[in-house]
Amino acid sequence: MTTNKAEQVRRRRVFYIPGYDPIPPRRYRELYRKESVRQAKISGYQIEINGKKSGTGPFGWHVQAEIEGGSVDADVDVLVWSDIVRTSMSNTILATYLQMLRTAWIYIATGTLRRLMRLRKGPVIAALYPVGMLFLQLLLAILVGVAIIKGLGVAASLIPIGDAAKAWIITPLTFVAGAWGGERIMNWFRAQDGRFYTYYLVHNFTFSAKLGGANPPELEARMRAFADLIADALTQDLDEVLVVGHSSGAHLAVSVLADLLRSGRVPPDGPALGFLTLGHVVPMVSFLPQAHRLRADLRYLSTSDDLAWIDVSAPGDGCSFAMCDPVSVSGVAPQGKKWPLVFSAAFTQTLSPERWAELRWRFFRLHFQYLCAFDRPGDYDYFRITAGPQTLAARYAGRAASGSRIDKPVSKYRSVAAR
Image (cartoon, rainbow, N blue to C red; front, side, top):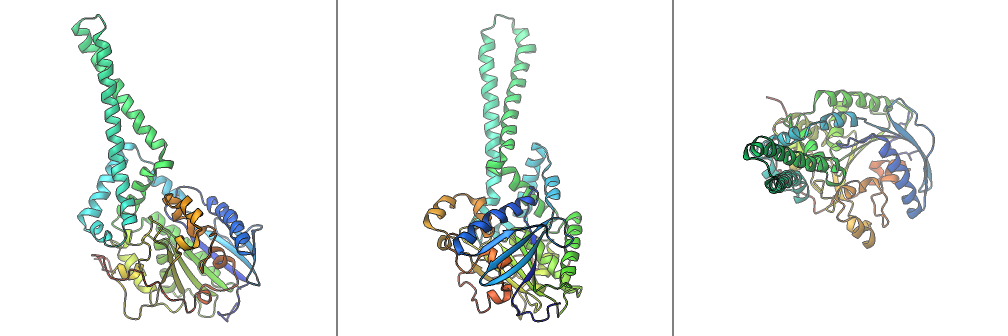
């Protein structure tokens, strides 16, 4: 077992926790494969996914790299919860509208939406966008239905049949046709949600809000199993165990690590423990009234000497609470707070003007940029972090937090114990 945590990394285990995503985790393997090749070509190092990972995780891959003069082997494990996401999205159109109304009421009635608006506009707009889109889709469906009814009514008036026949046969048929046309419009929009993301966002926010910020039992079970994998890795002959949480996966990772530390399963003489959060949306959950567990976990991790916690986001990512210290804005920063170190991936600087112009309005693609190649890389490089020869702590030792970060307490709900 590695006892010198400052030693150069040769063997690493990476535990990746994705956000709310219905697509199976192989997408992350292929994204890593494609983007690591691009970054290696740009930055002048070698990296490849080669063979199967070691270990017993449900899904992952093995990485071999030659970076910064060091040879590194890394195994990547993914917390699989895409099936839970798909189940939460398997609702009828009517049920989705009801979910939207209920979720909007939760965020508005608790004062959470008003508080979130004090942070970043981007994710608040992302939260309001599906509300507007669902109402627009409903309006278009109604207009199409009315147009069909009126058009068929005019056509029926030209048919030489009696008024009774029109009243009992033609008129009901026109209303049926109008309803059918409206339904087709609604179904078309749902089928095209890969372009509009309306239903996806409603289900995403509903998943966070339906229990007031608490995790559903089936997800907690996956988190416990994943924590067991991490605990096992911390007893192995490794130089670093790195936990990465992206988007809503960031707040899940906070709780997984807090549970590990509280239970004493992080050995003091084990591998270095690094924690990287990317494009987090923590306030969407931690600001809710029942998020006692998450707030307690944020508070607990923020003073730990047993890990290094780096938080990376970018103002150009409109789907995250960029540059918001998740502990401080949640109102649970204790005396002696150390973590996270918050800094920006600075998309406008680390992407060329041409690449930035290409991606600027592709909001969901930008939200995944942290996992992708930069054509003008700065000191953030996902592949150097996950497959390079330095621990996360060593890589950012002495790195100052971004001066533009938001670290004032904003949340109305700050309790860390259920009542």
